[in-house]
Image 1 (cartoon, helix red, strand yellow):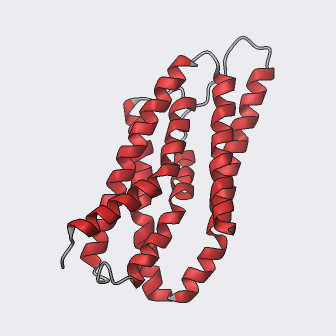
Image 2 (cartoon, helix red, strand yellow):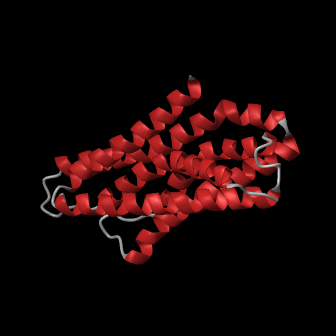
Amino acid sequence: MFFSWVTALEVCLIGISLAMDALAVSVTDGLCYKNLTKAKGITIPLTFGIFQAVMPLIGFFAAYGLGQAFSELFDAIDHWIAFLLLSVIGAKMLLDAIKELRSKEEEITEKHYSFPEVIVQGVATSIDALFVGVSFAVTDGLKNSIPSVLLSVGIIGVITFIISLTGLLIGVKIGNVLKNKTGITGIIGGLVLIGIGLKILIQGLI
């Protein structure tokens, strides 16, 4: 098995491209989650990195097992799945923020960290990576070698982790500046998630 520097560079560029949605969602999480400890916070980039690595593996083995039928079926619905998942989370965030702004109570209702929500975000932002795995199965560039694919998805996962961690820290910094404006941060976060979902949907329909 030969994994050239050119191939490694290509995989790194793929990883950076795939991580952009995770970056935006990480910034949103850092902005909106108000009770993030280090232990909770690290689960966000870790979850995104794991899903970004696992999805290509699923696509790779599914392409071998199910062939063209799998690719065609999932190609028709993947963008809808991502759109629905992110839109539901974003809409809930928006509604909570609007209620917060309309509330006359002095106590501020903060958005708390939710690991199930992070899992849903991880799935939604990594669906595109599934087709990277399909391409690994059909391209000659990686010689259809499982060791090469494992190395590739590992690189993609690490890149996503680093980029997501950076985004999370940026979001936390912004959130600290707007710490007394919970409703506003919720609206921003909700709109960002819905916007990412719409972007994925439009790209899938074009």
